[in-house]
Image (tube, rainbow, N blue to C red; front, side):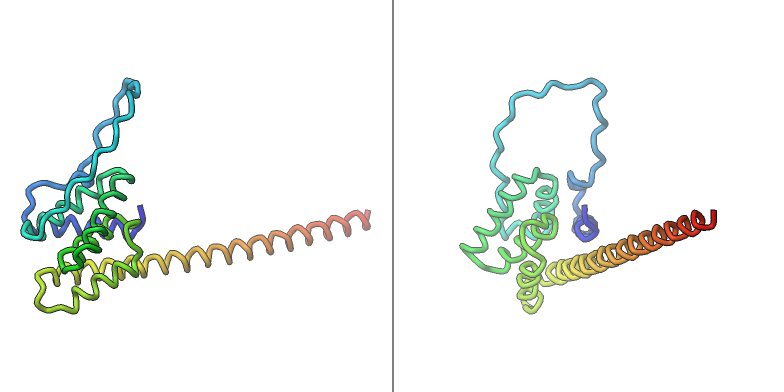
Length: 189
């Protein structure tokens, strides 16, 4: 789990608790204890369709609960939920469709790129009369943090690669010096 995704999930949890949700989303509950007896796998059940998107009248609390539930789904179902939100946005690109897609993209990173999510949130954050402005500003900060975390991670990987190359070069030099030392010792004997 990436640092940015973890931050997004923690932010979503905080928002859910602020919104007065009585229970934690499934993805934050402790995993069930492992069974001690091996279970025999049964026939694979067909994938059920994703749950329907909450309606705009359900409010932000329902949207956040939906996003929390979407984070706990399997990867295939997450993809289906994301496609459902994208289809709704393509069909009716209103503020609610934007915030729904951006919220899902926060908990399901493969849904949209950070830049696409930033574009959606920028439109909402610029509007002063939308009820989703506050959530859009928070999600925008999460997206910016994820982007800066990704850049810092890329810089760290580049630094690691540079240090590994230097270490290899120093190892080669040490090997060559040891060979020269061994030859000189053989010549002295």
